Length: 144
Image 1: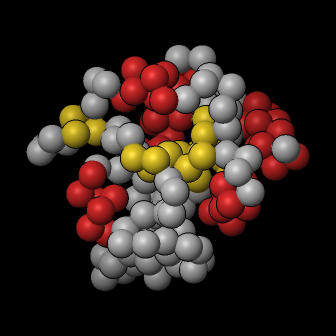
Image 2 (image 1 turned 135 degrees about the vertical axis):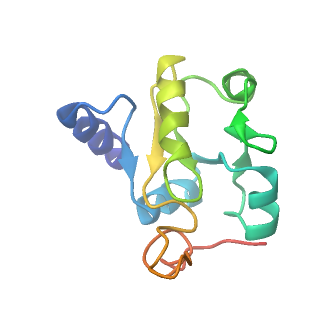
Image 3 (image 1 turned 90 degrees about the vertical axis):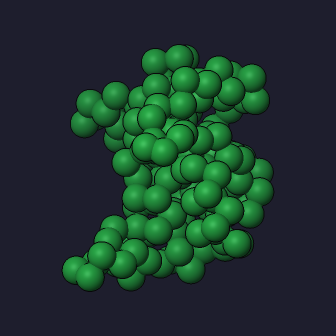
């Protein structure tokens, strides 16, 4: 998988503490061909109410209100996926997914990559998302 290899090489060159980043389009290409699994690390509420990528797997990085680190995140990932699986991590704006990718790299997952821009993307001047970038902005498949 050339896309994954390139992302890993770029990550090493700039010293990222995780496997690397992919654009939403690259992530969808890998997922729809079955070469990777999209793991949504948002809360169940975000996943179900805002929407999600078809066939994505929900494993929340945070839980509760106020949100705190989900202590079962890494154990759940270890239970559900092999350490050599290509996992593409997605959250709202690509912040939690980076933290999750770092934790997974530290746990021995070599191909846990961050999806740049997130599901909803960056907030615009009025605080709304989905107008500047992100999965939804690029009109990639999603369901509610």
